Length: 250
Image (cartoon, rainbow, N blue to C red; front, side):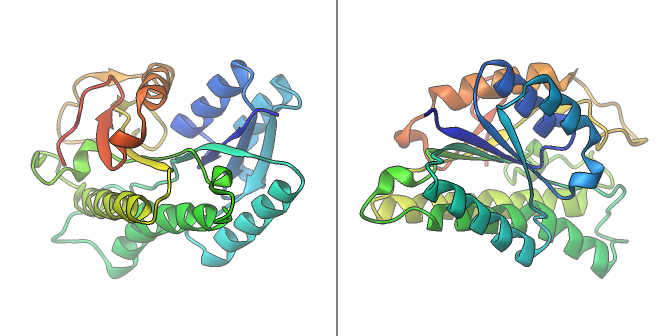
């Protein structure tokens, strides 16, 4: 049996395109969404690739939902499921989210969904592997980050992206620590951060005060990211990459 990809945040945009391309190439996919009732586009893809896609619910803003999702994956593993690569794609960007204006509730929502939820979801999936059989651990954990989260390449012109950028910067630091902790414990799961490019998606469809250069479609972004993911090995764990193969500065 081929190992399954897990895509968390698969109802639209980049996540949906990962599902579409992977299933289109014959891969088995577990597509996790916040709510099945709001995943109409995903179910259209499921109907197209019968038998290859399993839809699960996982709301990364809810610890209870994450734990329930992990338990269902654990039960499936006991029935023979093997996890391959995991894409942590769920995220929000409530524009504008300026540092001088952001509310407690909005800032917390960005951190919960973009940082805490993806890290805890990865943590739960890692914990499902048994130490006597490390081969059951995910092969690669890929976090969809952003160039907005780079500390050394600060994008000051992105007015209204403060909380989003902060949440992605925090995600970057956490995944780097995760990579080192796995390495110290003798694990073999590879942890990567990916900048998907300036992708035209529903989340990005907001009126901005500046011109976004180099806009690409989700299809091109995911094609590039899949190539990069395939190329990376254990020596690359804890590194940050662009969709087109360039290394991105932290």
